[in-house]
View 1 (tube, rainbow over the protein chains, first blue to last red):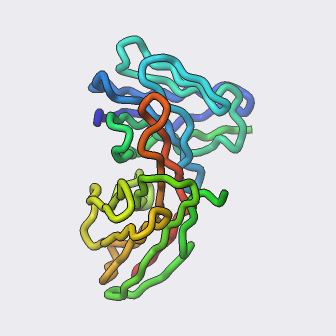
View 2 (view 1 turned 30 degrees about the vertical axis):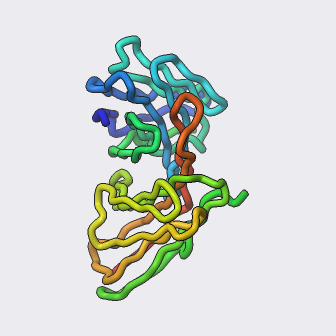
Length: 110
Length: 116
């Protein structure tokens, strides 16, 4: 599975959009981009995934560049409860493992 | 639905003792996983199972054994605990396929294990 690069930490004001970037320049054609988050001491939580089209669900939007070498997770109206570590993961086969890097610590400030 | 549950939530062991961590899921998922998370680090896969009666090694399998005798349960065993196994252990489960050929993993709340 392709390696990902994320910033170590980011801050966002409550109510504003949080934009979390992820680089995956070695991604191959059959690899999906997944986002999970982990709120302190809890198990990771699935957020969203995509292959090449932009995706949106009730939690977030995922924007994947046309060359698929990078993506951005967007939380449209961040709340204090969105403070967490966000993991960008790239993987191919659906039944395969999730490889977690160190993720981005997002802190939403009041 | 309870989702994914883990037993126990906390445990302290002495070096050399053994224990079993239990993971249970009520979502009829085929795949189940055990991860460990050390302070300040991401999760690392220990073992996983793609179906009842089958198991496979993950990234860091040494010192652990697993069993999947029933589809809904996945057991993680430590035969002789070592301080290096002090960690938070997370279990997860998932379907084998999903829309668009992909799916998400559902995680349990974790077991905090300290080995002294």
